[in-house]
Image (cartoon, one colour):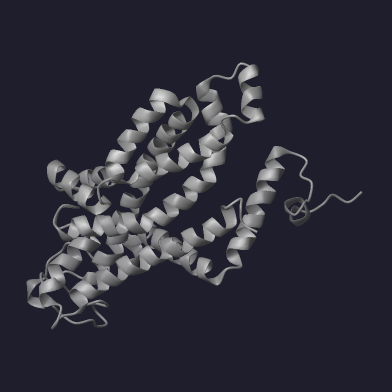
Length: 300
């Protein structure tokens, strides 16, 4: 009997193992994702950001912080594709190397925010009572303030720097994940499979990690992808106000701030990094919308 190929294995209607079921699900989701043109555009932009950040020294071998005052505010040309800024620094090199900072901020915020938010939300939903009340009231306090204003307050108190900017953004981004995880947990807290797990001796930590966390994962991925656009805009806002990466780091928000005085005559100084912020934010939004359509269990 001929052994079925990979295509047939991935399209099986009745998976034989848990690994195959996982592969079939994600393969079908990927196919659905790639059928949506806007999602493909978003995925292309995000992958482009990762590619540019990974190969920045090759794509832009120029020193992004090297000054050349005799060549300041030069327009775009064959030598300087995006022109130069007020200190003669190559804007193309600064935008390309700035992609690394953007990716670092996005990655660090996601690594900090998602686990903290999910842990707080799942604990509140599973234990209920006083634990739920205390954790959700703390969450409500953070959600009562506009995110950007709260991030500015934290960043101002912590001081400028990429680490402090990441911490300030993370402190204002986790509450929606806690709310989301709590809602997901409440829907399954009294379910039969959790009761069976308790009867088999599973403790709260095992129940959270093995049974509740997988149910919250898809919603958290969607939320994180959609939130990355806001994270990028918040980071750019902090950089614009001088509370982000320290000069002369090629941070896009700081580049926009330094070029705003030359907007009318030398438009490229702040317009180019502004376009980079716009494109990356748009890419994460488009990708997040596509992931929501694919991973949402209630979709038709």
